[in-house]
Image (cartoon, rainbow, N blue to C red):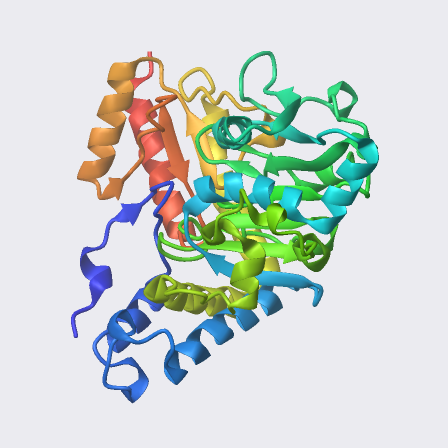
Amino acid sequence: MTNPSNDRVLNFSAGPSTLPLSVLEEVQRDLINYKGTGVSVLEMSHRSKPYDAIIRDAEATLRRVLNVPSNYAVVFLQGGGTGEFAASYLNLFASKSVRAKQAKLGRALSCDYVVTGSWSKAGMKEVQRLGGHVNTVIDGVDGKYVGVLPVSQWKLGKPEETAFVYYCDNETVNGVECRPETVVDAVDPSVPVICDMSSNMMSRPIDIKRFGAIVAGAQKNMGPAGVTIAIVRDDLLERDDDPAVLHNLPSVLDWQYYNKGGSMPHTPPCFTIYVCGLVFKWVEKLGLDKVEQLREERAKIVYDVIDSHPEFFKGPVNKQYRSCMNLVFNLPTKELEAQFVAEAAQQNMIQLKGHRSVGGIRVSLYNAMTIEGAQAVAQFMQSFYDQHRQ
């Protein structure tokens, strides 16, 4: 067997992202013949005993790593983050508790959106497209996505008029990361908080019991693209028997439908879930506290270079809210940015171009990126600065 590490580049992609090398090597060993079954997971029936063990083990490991309370369901879904924009809204408005609150109010409840970047904005627009009544709590800072306004300036709806509060914990495009307590401390406990943690799930400990639901695409910190994970408090899965409740909720977006079917009411993304399970074990072996320590160290290595030369590496995000996952900055000219990306690629560092909607440079430092990888890109940044400073 060849050693895949010999010709691998440093992959700073925002997603699908780099995976732990030890996980890739285990996948490689088992790819043709999984654990003596004679078949690959790629061709294994999802109704077989070996696969049932894979998906159950993946869920159990995730529950241990994140300390998921017993009154929360864990489901593996498809449809990505965009699917969960709609699913969050449709599932909450099908739940018994939200319907009871709406009946008491006598009119439609609002959906509160804390907009800190492109993805929370997209989530809000999806609910508006579906006909939901949206209350924009905040939308950037001075018209830009560079941080989070003080809570004193938020426009939260009245608890009795609000179905849920939604926010994105880490904005991959804009490089804004919001500590969970910033939101949950501001929200009345009677209102469930729905959080998109696609790009920083499993990068630090979180107190899950403070959320109504957490949704996350796997392709940043948890595995390959193709599966989305929802962690949902049981009471939000409770429904009335009225068939009209499900009239606007397709099965493919129905959390309860997946939960009752053990995440397999139909064929799941089997191989993706298998790899996720291996990543969960990798994180468990490290421990979330160690994972958090490493994430802070990686980010500091790169931010130290940015902060040493702020006139050259122009970081737009307020320091208090700078992401440890997606570090964004601009160079003095677009020509220098293109040269930066090209020269980095020549040194086997790829996917450093910023998102197409904002440009600039983006260094994504997910869990599987090593300290040595962060050091390498920081050294390249310093060298590039030395060559091009005025």
